[in-house]
Image (cartoon, rainbow, N blue to C red; front, side):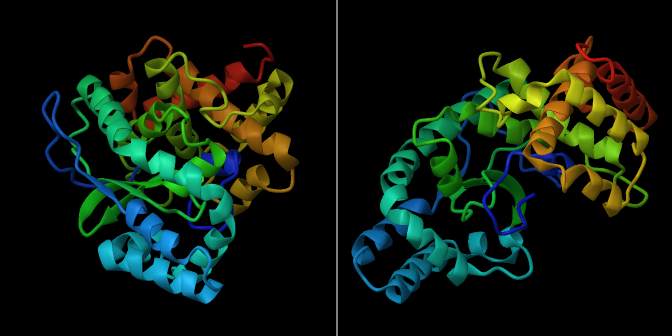
Length: 314
């Protein structure tokens, strides 16, 4: 989801990526406890304020120095993959900074309190998620809003404040972002053998979306990155039929058939389809029960959801 260097898109591409991978979590906080946090955006903004009128190479050099001088682990392979391109990414960010700075600065100021409140609210409801941070308020260069990474041996939720500020604005509600990420971490990892089949990745995307709709019933479609064009029941029915036809596939060609070449409507409908599948599977189950589902029971539930969605209006 986050390895490609481009603006994040609302699309079925998100359907095909697992947000949660297996790990050993640090002990969770007691009710009212403190979530461990790291914020590197303040150092970045301080550096930027001293070079905002400087030539671009100096801007890149000074902001790079600020980031690598505080938490270099957040800008290396553990977060950005085997070939991070920090200078290139910073140069692209510099182009946006004159317009982005006030939004980013306002968001960075409110994030510590928002993260603590939102994460603690979730953990109070789901004590089985044995985790107490860290949460890193960082930069993603618009590659992601929230991803799980193992950083310096610790399971870390990394937030891309630049992406959040750019696409949601500085005062957007953070509960949907944080709760979506934490809900994804409730799911067990795929245990194989081999790569995860399509039905599993549909569930990995659908469960967090449906969970946020349950935990935060007032959340908007925009908060969940669900555009209006994805609502079409007829198109959902077509896509449900296509997905069901390759439900056990692990082939990249089948994934590409769903993610490429069909335009924005196909992409956005994929995210809607995942949500609808999640809601069907959750019917009659608690979030706690659903998060523990796996194997044939889960596959059967996903398949039944897709059968129902093939009937427009279901």
